[in-house]
Image: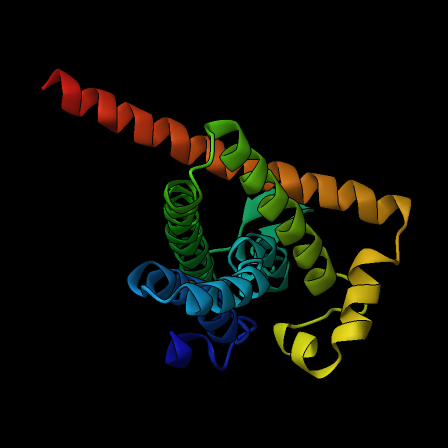
Length: 202
């Protein structure tokens, strides 16, 4: 992917993909380790990096740079390279969002078993994570465009920007991002239940 996208408008995709993989790998390690303190530390890092997964959905904004649609004629441009880049973006975003949110469910089940939580409490926890992730997405996409590294370099400034600086437009976009999370989780939940039903019938 690095070689395909590096010299294009989509050279950002390799880094964004790496950042999206980090929370997935952290989720594996959280489920693998038996050390409670280590699990808590890894869970904090996972929560910090998790917004990088749904953030991939916002990268669709960069497709505008490819100029594949002529607004005057209403015709699409026949560019193999351009359409290829769009398909790469779609596959990366679709795969990592599906993978990342599946691991989110796995972590929720782990927390439910370890802490003996009710389903309602687990759902509230998922909503809380989704809200924090939505706030992280906003901070990463809009001015001043924070990155994960900034939390380690300027944690107080990051916390101030995310939690204390508000506007009506910020609230609206965070709600929109939150609904994106709910939509993804709802789709995966319905798919999972449908598979379980099919297995029982067979």
